[in-house]
Length: 605
Image 1 (cartoon, rainbow, N blue to C red):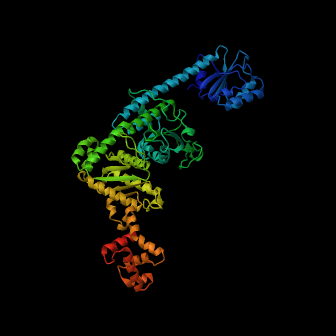
Image 2: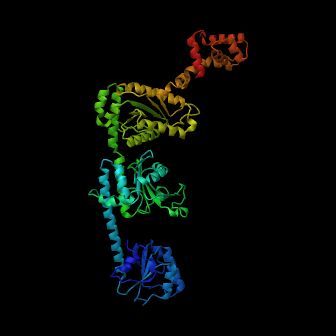
Image 3: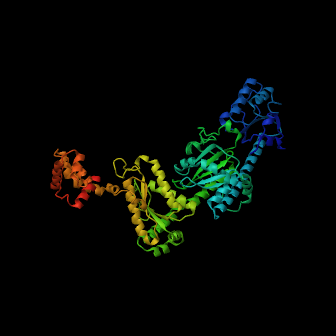
């Protein structure tokens, strides 16, 4: 970008500095000729105003003070006064007003046409833009080569940090940091996980700016910056500036979420600006967060931290990184559908008791999963989704989609293979026993229960907890590929128990840890209990005795007349009469142990 100083030094312009010799380092965005008394409505800021004072009363001190103050408030960086046209020299009133407003005043000789100054400024801006574009091409070629390498996203993040002269971090769909560079920026990346999570919840593409993040000098930053140019190689074309990332001025606050200022201790300044004062002695980052994804669902977040707003070349690099990371992290819908069909085929073969055929179909994609003990998880959501057309990938309810994202992130971080198949509105997962995916499922269940504390312990379908827990899941015991059928049954049993206990996830090993009474919350059992006891309850409601309470007391005392009568506060003969009435009404003998068992279970249901 040209500056006032570079224009003064230009040999063909022959400009002289009349005032503001100490303020010439300011950038000139454009050179604008204007003879208006008030040109401010037509300015954007950063201009060098060129005038011969055709309509200005430059000898009026008050008028000049007002004129210069308006220009200063509009962001004008300087005034070029053409001499030899209306005035041979700049009047003192103009000089004084220039000094007071701190707007540098340059003398333009009669031999220098204003258009010559405009051409020099335009040529300098064009040269800067060309250099930025060239650097952008180099950055994109370098990042493209990095994306095609073995490390993929991690290398892209590393090279991007080098190109912007700052740091970069990549977050997965679960909000965990997948990659960060340089290593010294790990703490800052962790501190921004909350901001990244908020951005992920918005439809892609989206961006936000976080200002005032405390930052020590990242280790290796200088080496990384020096290596940026060395790593450039021939590759792809420049990115499209309209790709959905933040605008070139670095913040898209109103349309993509207002940027939030952040103090050194993590508090918000509330105005999007870096805090001043106490933190002035420490370096602070300006961090841009960019969502990744071509659809409405975010598939990750990229964070880029620098000391100030991104320059055009750095902006090109960020655009390229967003596009490349989106391609790397978001597989095409066709590939996802094909992988889903393959996974479904493998699972069905395993459930059919054909592990050898399943291994042959799985090939290298899932083959390694079948070489170790696995666990099978079956998850169900409270809110179903609409059916899809034949051949389309089966959609997942939101709660199951979040679970799948968490498992995907854990698998990617650990380099672990697992199989996840939507099945009639449920999610069936086959994962290595003791692996990262199994652990991630347990951790996700803990987070869901923590978010719905009032629903934990409430059976699904009860008045108190109906629909409160967004999902429930059951996990089988460890099993080999040959007995996946058994594992599926175990997982469904655990899922049923999870519903009755009001828990998000129950493992098959925990099924026997509870009471058999927990199993009585099933709708079918409840219907049986209501039918069995209905006649006794109707008898009691007509005021003809307390048969249900008497039956409960007698059964709880194992048929001991005296103890049960004492609990009820009646004579044992009264209790004997009531039990005969129970037998008469039900048409069953209380001497039959099966009858006693069924009545007790009905009372407990």
